[in-house]
Image (cartoon, rainbow, N blue to C red):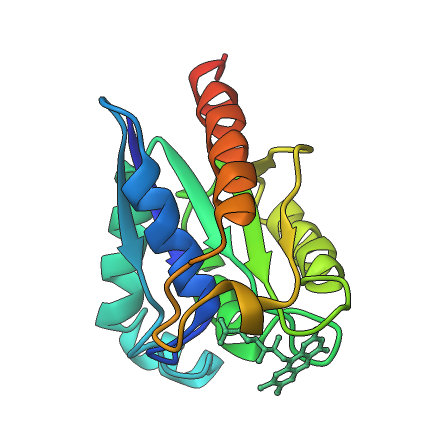
Length: 181
Ligand SMILES: Cc1cc2nc3c(=O)[nH]c(=O)nc-3n(C[C@H](O)[C@H](O)[C@H](O)COP(=O)(O)O)c2cc1C
């Protein structure tokens, strides 16, 4: 099984990208998790699309999505919602593409402080994914709060309890992908 994990954050020390690295490390035999970032994707511009089609960075990511058995998104929370970088990428990707259709998909996320650990943004992102016709795993869900305590300065997950829950999430997600009709 080949899974593609896409981070909605660009910064090097991102804890959301760190969550994806942790998932990659814990993938069982027979499951590979490739990590993609959204660097190099320009802002969506309909004139640019009409003149030149999709940018190369978008086409390359679209091809990786098409090949994957399942998708995992790490979705940070910005101003109670999905970061523009991630929304913009899905806007480009959705154009004249059926890569997302029926793709088994999971969402994870990590945020700072005591709050909802990206709960609000994950729920908004689920709605975006509905437009793309992804089949998003309903539960378990994973909302990692207090990321300032659970990751090191490079964004590596250091908290054993979070790692345990993340492992359980991954087991459920693999089953969700396997049971694809
Ligand atoms: C523009 C901006 C808006 C943010 N808004 C929220 C928010 O609404 N809720 C929240 O919990 N955290 C918010 N944060 C904090 C981020 O969730 C936090 O910085 C998190 O670590 C970002 O994810 P990363 O570690 O993957 O970069 C915001 C951060 C930025 C830069």
